[in-house]
Amino acid sequence: MTLRFPNESEEYRRARDELVQAEKGLRDHIERVAQQRRALPSGGLLKEDYGFEELVDGQVTKTRFSDLFGEDHDTLFLYSFMYAPSMASACPSCTSILDGLDGQVRHLDQSISTAIVAKHDIRTFHEHGASRGWSRLRLLSSEKNSYQADYLGESDGRQITIGNVFHRQGREIRHFWGSELVYHPLEGGHPRHVDLIWPLWNVLDLTPGGRGNFGPRLSYENSGRS
Image (cartoon, rainbow, N blue to C red; front, side):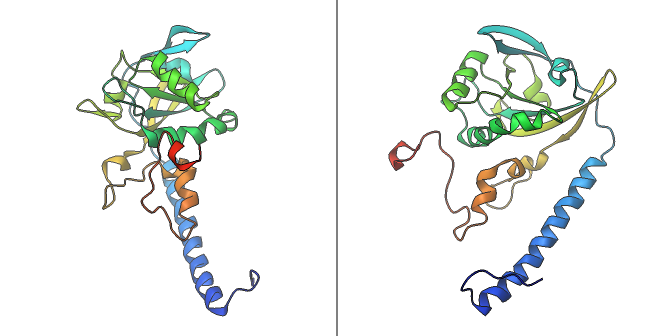
């Protein structure tokens, strides 16, 4: 198959054809890794049926981990959000991820359950979510349990971004996968462990400037854009 865009040079087409072969190799490798991930044996049993705080109709309620699956799903994606009372503000990078994920919840709900957990108190966490316009993400507080520390979302009191997947089999809940690459950063300190769910970097990687020195912020008021 010969593909061409208007007015491109032969030099460009040769280089692009070489690149598409590399892109095909990357796509195939990503699928092989996904197959390897799906073939993981059963992980460890859930340490405990943690009790989270959740805000429902303005009231703080207690929600058990086992309730997060709902009635129809056997899989739960639980994202650890970097936000704790010791932090001056919520993590801008985590916020960027969830700005995008909020719009995907209605689609994810067709297959799995999704929830977000932070160490901060639930009302403060909800206030941050409301300031971002999140309307579908299920927000939880782990302020009164050890979930974050147990499942690698906290180390020596420091909050760490990590996504974990849990699988329910009958009455058993087991850990399936976690984005452990956060503990194996690339040279330069960028772990890229949750890039697959982060549209920002996937788009910038397609551009001439790439990621550059850009970093997400909670506000871009000085740039003239929100």
